[in-house]
Length: 267
Ligand SMILES: NC(=O)c1ccc[n+]([C@@H]2O[C@H](COP(=O)([O-])OP(=O)(O)OC[C@H]3O[C@@H](n4cnc5c(N)ncnc54)[C@H](O)[C@@H]3O)[C@@H](O)[C@H]2O)c1
Ligand SMILES: O=C(O)C1=N[C@H](C(=O)O)CCC1
Image (cartoon, rainbow, N blue to C red; front, side, top):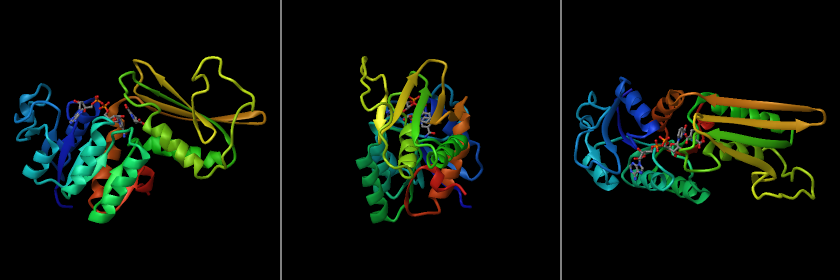
């Protein structure tokens, strides 16, 4: 495999730091630039925590970064505001996005799909890069064929911007694809405190927990007469996401389509 030249957006973030580690420690990957919202024009090695990373310029403007850098892939680990624009701009410059940033709307996903078709380029949007989380979603989809009453409880650290999590939305979408719409609970149920029953997705309920101490966790509960099943995944650190990022970068170089969800590229 030829060396893959990579830009990372959000390098100083919790995920971005892990991604810099991954890229700089993977033989066939090369970090060619980073995109931040400050420190334009300096080198990454001048920033605390990155002294050993040599020859990587910092940009604050994506257009300039893409024009001045010869890159194959943009890994985006930023915010729901910045991520969609970064992915779109990368594609328009012939650079393939691998996006971990969550909080994209359906319309934004559709637009990226259209640009991929037009440009014949690959793009991977993965709400969760942890292989265990992908299995949790697939197992939940399997269980939903037999258990139609479902509550999704996602639990994250309290610095998270979007709710529900991208993983919870993706799980609900995967379940909705195999389950007939069902309005759950008592037909006359009423919330005496707004939000008590969580968000409604096709009759399923999604509950978002935010607490310091947590990283990324989700349990999907299924109920039927006299029995329940709980399918749960826990990420205890952000290294848990990196094998998925590596597979996504390798895969996006080989295909020219839009992919939403790591389950679509894992064997
Ligand atoms: N897909 C996954 O497996 C996965 C796992 C963890 C987190 N996430 C998602 O990844 C994103 C980042 O998470 P995090 O915990 O690292 O957040 P974070 O707040 O620690 O990091 C985000 C970084 O993005 C930078 N940033 C913000 N706006 C920017 C811009 N316009 N240009 C360049 N950089 C910008 C910030 O300075 C910050 O360093 C979130 O959307 C989160 O939900 C996804
Ligand atoms: O830390 C976060 O933020 C995470 N977000 C993703 C989501 O929204 O599903 C995945 C796990 C970590």
